[in-house]
Image (cartoon, rainbow, N blue to C red; front, side, top):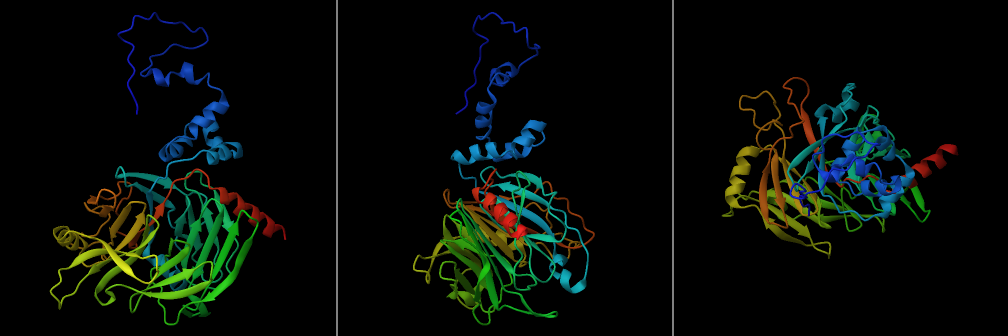
Length: 436
């Protein structure tokens, strides 16, 4: 805890320092005469304890601080020190027509700018990705890294980037040609797992959800470059494009009818899990929270005497049963339903938080303007620990432009990290493969 230190009541004569220029000092703890005498190694260790937002600002303080973020000795020192887990969310504005680039041959250079939400303080921050080339879209997030996938049909190129330092680590291109597959990413301190599934291009004009392929790399020296393939369950429909990782498995939502697809990474096997109340679900979304897989959906049973509600189920450890863990209060759901206007919603989970984000309106120039990004309510934040619901307002960095293409806000769970140990493994593997 910080304490104010006041020396005004002490009769201490001023001390002269001939080697320093005297200037007014607002706080004795920020006295430049103290900080300038700290050994660089000790100062570097102090800097490793800075919160995530400080590292974003450090890049513009001075050349030394900017270079420090890319210095291997400093990054090694950062990795040696345990840090508190920061449960944030990261959002990107993405043009809807990007998902149709392969069919209409449009050329659009998306603005690679992200918006960070700190749910503990309900504060927003902005970060740029100047090194990401055009033609890529964010697809997954894990371990402080963002996975970008190429938009062009064919073998997919993937990039892993760190938003804080702006680094980019390329992955080898996938083997099977795909259009817009679902992508799953799991990054730990010792391994990287990536799974790409669905949208197999059976011809230049047709796609089917037939297979998945996986990439694995660990610090034990073992790697598999898309060599692990598996057939998807029959008649599956992967429309969300995202996967959720929990307990060593990837999950994605299956549509028509609703079910959950589970991919066991170790066993290289896909299976189906029946969704709870699947005949009465609206906007079902999978997310992860505190190591558990959650299914969040609105329940509408019009012919039965059951009130409409928004519910959260957790997949039990047995892997086939669901248990309801939370339900939105009825009065709050009525308010949420009015704001949402049946446009649908998506969910993101991280730690104790689940963020329910309302989708935008199809026609951005409607008379009432419901669903625009700059409305008073962007979504609802649920805190599992405090058991409370909080409305989250719009991001102040997003300017709503009524002209042009409709845009959607795409979000992921994000843990700000200055460095990830496995990033060096990915770079080393890329160097090895390029030299072959």
